[in-house]
Image (cartoon, rainbow, N blue to C red; front, side):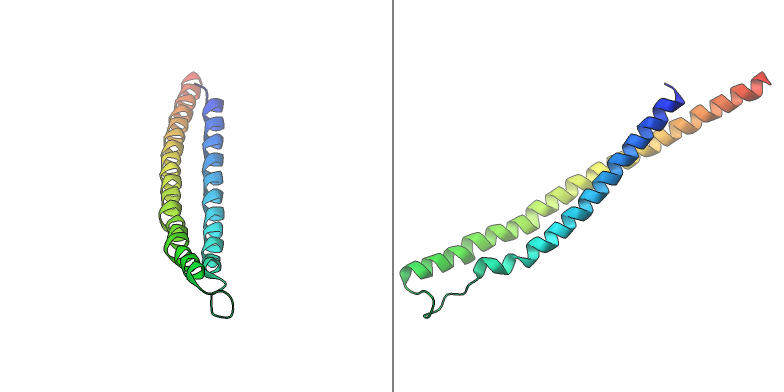
Length: 119
């Protein structure tokens, strides 16, 4: 393969890495926003002035035991698994970039040796 091919491949992999880093940063911002909205699940609080009785109690239990639990699972498990996948892909891309740079160095060294040989 030619040097031009490897330089193009290097640019492509670097762009993919840059996009993943930007994605990770954006995801972090969205996670922070998501965390800020957690309190909205239990709002408004129910009292004798707003709503009371068996249905109100069941509704409040559902909010606290099911909805809040699922919301926290999203924040914890699902965000963490996405971060893990992104980190693994970024690591893979960094390895590919290093390998491509090494190939470019060896091709440039071979080209320089050929030029020196022909002079």
